[in-house]
Each structure stands twice: as structure tokens, then as C-alpha cells.
Image (cartoon, rainbow over all chains, first blue to last red; front, side):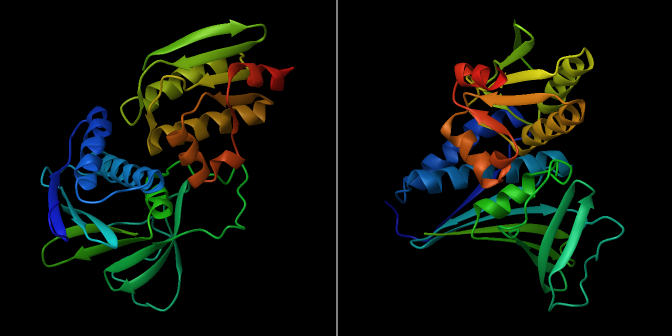
Length: 175
Length: 112
């Protein structure tokens, strides 16, 4: 085993049917450096699948990469892609944020809503919904990618670098 | 998307044959099931016996199907989900919305 931390850079497959096998390979790579129980294995698989699916769905750029840093107490997975900054629906607050001290409700569409906490002008954290927020069939979203990553991770942050024109989706898991 | 169809009395059992229920198949699957609902099917069981993983796109398709079926007084039961897929339903709290059963037998009991 190598000394931690180590960083692995991965390219994203452009075919959804290759994601499952690719995810298994990534998980095996991580397990060469640390033992993971089944709960962590499931969470990592979900996060990787959804980061890659998101990229295939929304990115035309071919230079999207995933950087994974494995350390003793945490795993960081960062998807980096060139392009325009994230754009919410017209009724939502947009980047750059002016107010940083309150939780915002944003949406990409009627069926894709999120609670976020701005961390800086171009950076925010996806928040988990409250346990008591019961859903009825009409209120259930139909877009789950970012929601799954939020729920499977300990922290899920989006950051835009206007100078580089670069979007980063940064996921942390604590062990 | 490879799906087999079987009539059992007045209900329809759809079994997904593919291993991956993902972005490349979700729209096609939705079309197959919507056609089934349009043709009058109201009691529907979907088997995931062969499915190894399910992504957010397919989850969205299942929600869309349920939203279509419920106002028509229809019922949908999902069966034979592996542990990873069951975990995904629990994580997203969709286990409280969908009727998940271990086997065809228990699903058929629910329809009696």
C-alpha cells in the first residue's frame, strides 16, 4: 500500500453503459489503499455514478476530469469541467451571490429544487432536506442526480472559477 | 431497453432484462410503460431481478410513471430489488413513496 494521501485523476467515460464497470474499477483502486465497509462502498458508487451521469448529460466539453484524493480520514472526489457557471431557473438567486448569510431555495426546474448555503460569491454547499419534510406524490422531484450526491456525501460543494471558466463539484466523505 | 411482459390475471408484470437501468435506457423504458398505461393497464409490477444498478435518470422515470398511474387509480409495485437499489430508495426516501416487495408472490398478495 502507498503512503496516504494520494491523488488519482480519472477521465469520464462518454457512454452511460460504461459507467457501472468504470465505477467498480475505481472502487477497487480505492480499496487498494484502504478498507471500506459495504456502506461506504455503496455511497462512493452512488456518488461516482451520479457525477459521471451528470457530466454525460450536461457537458459537451471533453475535458471533464475527476480528481480523487484518498486520505486516512477522508475521501475527496472533485469533478472539474470547463464551461459556463451553473444557471438556476429565472426565479432563483443566481451566482455571484450577494448575501452569504442565509440559506437559499433554488431550482433548475419545477421538478428539480434544492436548498443551498452560499459560502462565497461563486461557491455554495448543497444542503440535505429536513427529515420531517414529508413528500407527497405531486411534490416528488423527477431529477435526483444532485440530490443523491447530497444525501450520499458528508459535504457537497459547487464552486465556479470565473478566471479559468471552470466548474468544480466537490464531494467529501469522512471515515 | 429489454423488457419482458407477462399478463397475470388482470395485472401486468414487466421484467427488466438489462443489468444497467440507466440514462441510456430511462426514456425508452418510460415510453414502454406509458404505452402500457395508455392501453388500460392499472395494476403493474416491475421486476428488477436482473438489474445490478439504477441511476438517477431511471429513478426519475419511475417517479414519472407513478405520477401518471396514481391519478388513474392505478397501482405500481416494484419487486426483487438488490441491496444496492433498495439502499438508493432508502437514501432518497422514495421507499416511503413506492411499494417495494421482495418477491412476485408478496406483490400478488398485495393485489388480492
